[in-house]
Length: 85
Figure (cartoon, one colour):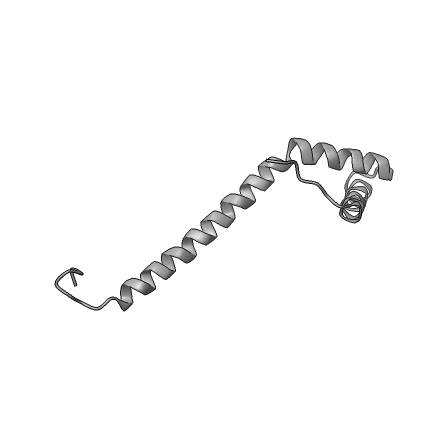
């Protein structure tokens, strides 16, 4: 898998969120460079865990929808000597 890349605009928004968090929760001011450096680190070291969790959640949602469709198809099936109904 290729690494997740953010556009310059996305990176700027995410770095601003980190700066806001540091200011509000840790009472520390960090600059844009430090925020982007931290964002790169977190993306590289932790991002895959979040990404994989998102994929798993998507797979589960898809499987649930497929199960619903299969149930709906089963309900449409007409009884015959081959269907077991």
